[in-house]
Length: 132
Image (cartoon, rainbow, N blue to C red; front, side):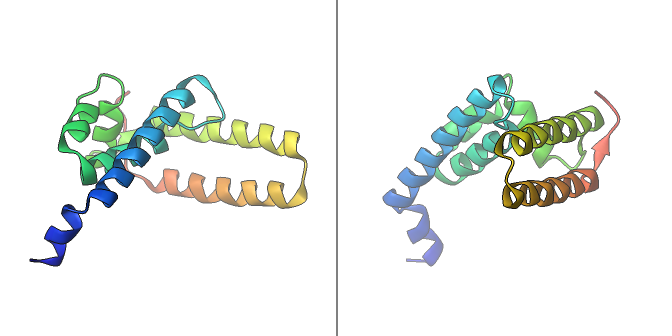
């Protein structure tokens, strides 16, 4: 039996990935309402987990009315909408600014600024499309 076949049939791994997928999907849904909890990274994580553990849930998520376009934008070579990228950067910095203000610790401020800079650079380097 090949190594790949053994990995695919591992019930513990499948259950773990399904659990992480559902937890991240729930967190992504909560992130729609809570401004400090990001939606997109959790949806993308859940799509990856489902792609590794359940074809049915992965297909359902890709065809979902709200979450499907997020996954499609990420997986396509067309890039993400410029408006979405800019909105993500603005909301990220607003959320981080609020966190910096609330926590008011030097190490937390420094960490958030470093993370914010890295994520902003990453987002600015992604291919963008002008539509929407």
